[in-house]
Length: 188
Length: 192
Image 1 (cartoon, chains in turn yellow, red):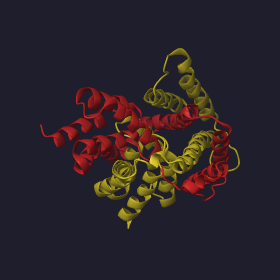
Image 2: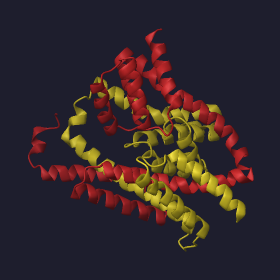
Image 3: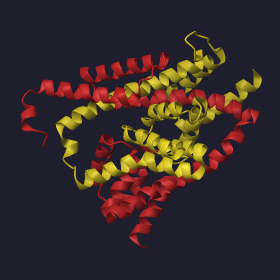
Image 4: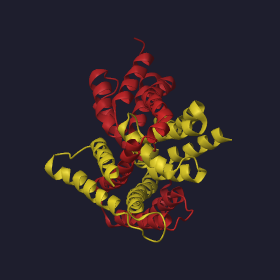
């Protein structure tokens, strides 16, 4: 039953999304692909859409996947499930467990989790770029257009921080990359 | 205006005008709930940021739940949390009904091919930013590097090992190392 699957899949994502907006992406990717809900390509597109629309990325992705699978009921259930762990845990912390967060054992576990997530996110980003540039198989098939575009966009994005105080924003990078895509793929 | 309605409208406004989520929302919440409405103090807000880092979920939602609860208990927390989610819920609903047809237009498809590249860079950048903020010592570096290598192996060889398993293993190893480094601490029990 798709609504149950959506609920439990998104609950899993919600439970383990420690550490900010992008922390949920590797897990979301895993859950969505293992159930075969939407393609990896579509998910990547939606990450960009979520970054460019209001609201936390994790919630936006859940809404999209839910709607794609089971219409508005699916969207509501997926969104509810992805937010539920965060909601309940904050209530628990306020009502019962104020001291738990300061407990050294809890902090030790949390330290492991958080550092693991940093490694996982770095690997997710690196692998995504690698796949774009060299294809999905184990045999490397370099796509030179993508490699050059990646190099240029990364230079612009990270280089802008040297020129401007805060650099260009993620939304600006998405805008620039969209324009680059229209021009480059329009010509080649 | 009744407080519940005020909570709902305030968080709906914040939910509607913050892009990208995460920390971008914090300054808006601070402005609305600390400076204007004085629902919580700046001190509360700082504490909340720390709690949010130790709990799952987007920090903006954590803040909404927290402030709602402080004002009107359980009902307040429900109303505030729904308030902050609802605007983006409808925006995404609207977009997702049109995205497929939109992608059939050739230049839109081309634009998204470019955007795909940006997403990889943004995710990598999110990881780098977390790396810069983290407390650096030999142990934390080993954890990050080991997780990175494990995740790369999982990705490249398409192994069916869940990220959750990886995270729980890291948590368990971290706990064991902590207990090994502090013999005797276990005798005092788990109290604060």
